[in-house]
Image 1 (cartoon, rainbow, N blue to C red):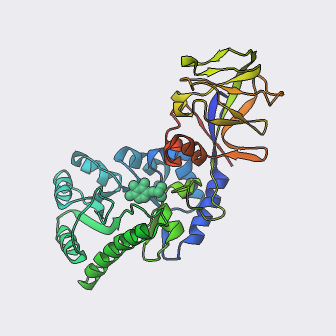
Image 2 (image 1 turned 135 degrees about the horizontal axis):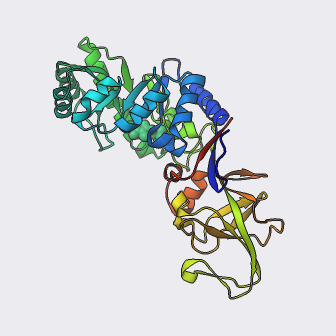
Length: 378
Ligand SMILES: *Cc1c(COP(=O)(O)O)cnc(C)c1O
């Protein structure tokens, strides 16, 4: 392993990733292949090693990303892969889409025409249908109308339509109203596919499962399961358990740089928001909000030190924070501490941190900043 600065770093378990892939495969029918969603640097886990592991060791053939830069990066890590861009590519880059053999998500007839206008090559695409997410895609009142527009799009010169897909808004909910909503979204896209099939158009791909649908409403009609967050072992929504065997694969660690004893009345960190009410041992840790450890965790977050939970005291600074180690007498300068991960019998997950400051695990892992090296372990 290459040496790295032991200040603040993230350890990513590739064996954990392989196990998560196996669990996801066991959820899917034989007809459904995993499309690994590796946008945003593989949800902050480090795109290159994650993609290589998925392609070379797990046999994953399909990847999804958010943009062309990410697609080109994945192309380098996985030369044979099918890569779908879920988000927007400016039409003037149509040539690059074709040159790298990327599949573009196409959201309208107008956009499809812009793309093909900008290149001599054929653009491969999957057409996005907005069945209720309200974000991007063709929007129609009936599957028949929707199929009609797709049929017309298929006549566009240099556009190769290989599939249709949609995205669920509330597949991570067990509320009956939300389940009915997702049922309607699913019915719309499968009906659209069936109308096309009835007119003799059999597209290779029809996909609508994200992580939540893969876990809670797996449907063999989806040729791909666009698995994002569960690949990384986190919850689509913490109110619903994820299937057994899916485990977080990233740990976030840092080091104690300084330990001191403070007296009652001593203040800790900016703003003097924390004032010691007794004699305490305070340790300074080499991580801060510039590393993606949110300032919203000030005086709230907990850190594992020698297997015990220590509370953050005062404000999280840009590069450092302080915690109370009064109950961990062995804590000393140079010790490694766990901000996300397992230590002894205890564990703090990205989902736990998200709960504390009112966001989702997705944002926590995506927010771990660039200066934090990602270290792959097996
Ligand atoms: C991000 C994304 C996914 C993956 O979502 P998860 O909840 O992480 O599984 C799937 N499909 C689309 C269109 C997305 O944008």
